[in-house]
Image (tube, rainbow, N blue to C red; front, side, top):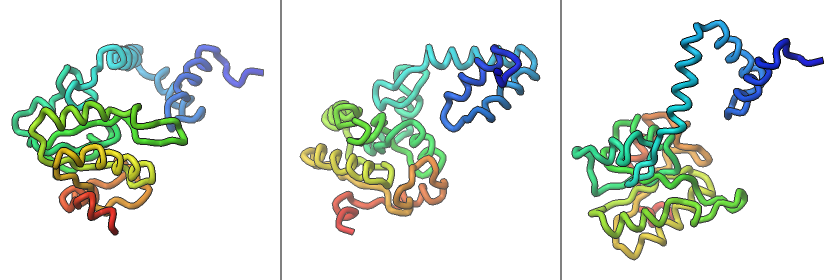
Length: 206
């Protein structure tokens, strides 16, 4: 016997449960909540999701999610264009921005090197990072990557890749606990880690 009284409800629950961190019970609660809402509220949600999926772009300069070809951060003349913070994905841009301790630009890799999951250097946005280093007036690259084996591997690869350019290459201090993702680090700790960043070479001697 089907556990749902409606195949339409079952279908909605099935789709909602595909979202990360959403189990079937939570998906059912969300679906029932939407049923109790005004029809217009559900329509607005559906329209917003479709519009996001169809119209969202990736900034041509930093690869961050954007509504335009060049994102608001990259196009802001008040940002320090000589300092670029390299992060794994858009969630990390949001995490660093929330600290209010960084006023430079970003470069979003779109992942980190992870051989176990079949992700290598060629799968990341590294070619464009090299191109930016070659063509823009960048003085410092900050590696703000997860404090994991994969994050350290990616950081070392980028360090070796960019060392010939004579840039200052730094990494956030280990105020971020080993094994932690940036998005789950509190704003104060992450902010201090950015302000107290270390030269990459020095951080690897510790």
